[in-house]
Length: 356
Ligand code: IPM
Ligand code: MG
Image (cartoon, rainbow, N blue to C red; front, side, top):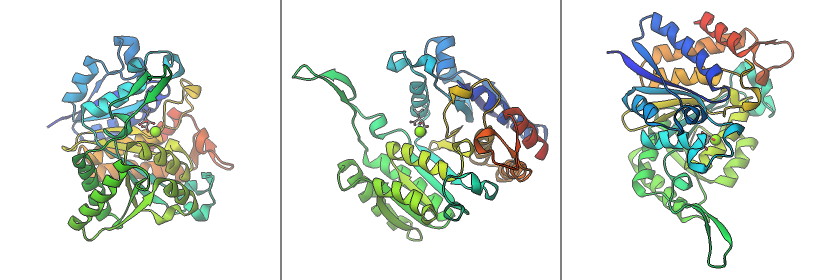
């Protein structure tokens, strides 16, 4: 049966990078992959068209789809809007609406890019980390929240870090299962020396370990994890953490691989439905210039094929094509180095399509 992919280009470089990823999927479609595309706006683009960052039109398409492919949202044009109307809220709303609690962010260093990292090649070569970030709880969604005036008449900002046991357990299962399929090493990141929320987190991860005895579980405070990620990143295999720590650590991990322009992500719910997006933002400074790196989005499309279409062989085909264009020496500006050929966003897409 035909699977429907909702395509949300979003803002900034979103439309350019998504266009290339769709072209890649269309190659597979011509080869017999039974998919169809439905387009809808999200973020600022949705605000412009419908007055809301995640309007009903988009909601209906995404709820009915089997998977969602997203570019990026946000831009300075929308910074003056009231908070609930901002593009980022659209992203948070779709994550919550589709219950996409499990965010998988692989940080893999392609051998061809070892010199693009700001860290020494020997520190990062062979790097292959999977960050499992909880995505629908924590301080991102906890109530109470807001900016109020306190008893002293002073303005006060409030956010609440909270996690229920069941929320921790379900992301824990995803992380243990991912670790069991890889090198059987899981590091749970918390701040249990200060925050009760993460004290509970640590306790539940320890408890879950009894169901996955083959996985060796370690715990690390988030500040130390940030340090270890640059000191000796190859000690990590799978890392599991809450929403805010995962947001920060995944950006940090991305730079180990040379560029955040290379990092895909998958956000999944219990049924395997997922939203796939590059880990990077909408890069308004280079939007519309055909300069962006489409590879993170193309690799996100590969994750879509793997997790939502259950087609491992075709997912690998996309990933090999990406590796091939890197071997050919093609680079967008963010990963460019001496001796390589500088290409535009669409030329990079052309090359991946040709390699397929
Ligand atoms: C990410 C982004 C988002 C987040 C923003 C755009 C709301 O930084 O996907 O990591 O904080 O989750
Ligand atoms: Mg982030």
